[in-house]
Length: 242
Image (cartoon, rainbow, N blue to C red; front, side, top):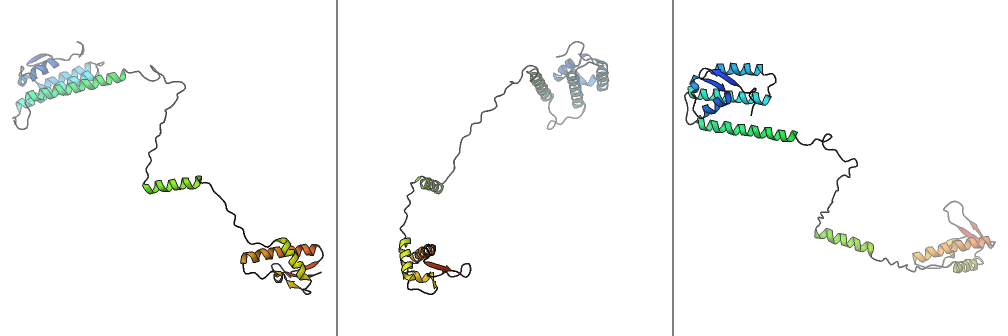
């Protein structure tokens, strides 16, 4: 819709009046377009645009579309028409009407968007925003083997643990002390400490007897009843009576 000052009124051979009315009559085939000069129409349109400095761009675009459609309709009348290719005037009018409706719908949508409340002018953000609440849901995916393995791991961790300390064969320090002290009276020269061990075949008991005999020899040397000798580190240990 345009005001009276924005209306484009043309004065050419065969027509004098508003351009939109001319287009409406041409679509209804009530005006002979053969008598209308397209050149004069274009010149008056350019003069109208040049004079209307404050004219809205939408109105100028509408008039340009109208003038273009008039030129197209006149060319359809003057040129040979192919019924299989060229559309009928009724179809052309329907296309123009649909396009103008779309254009008007876009303008209305743009106007509604521009008329909405703007942040910082009409509406304002909250001073202390709370943020968004994130809701997480687990989506477990596992086969039968993984379920059984997980169950076995949990049961192994939670099962009560019972420690059984096995009784190992050992030789007590008192027995080793009596044995080494008794054998020192029979050994006059230096003798390796392994000679004081009892004749046993169990390797664990033999190690225990060796350790106990060594401690017993140290105790006898402390009491002045025995002497110890070792030539170098990790060399055999010799014992004799003091």
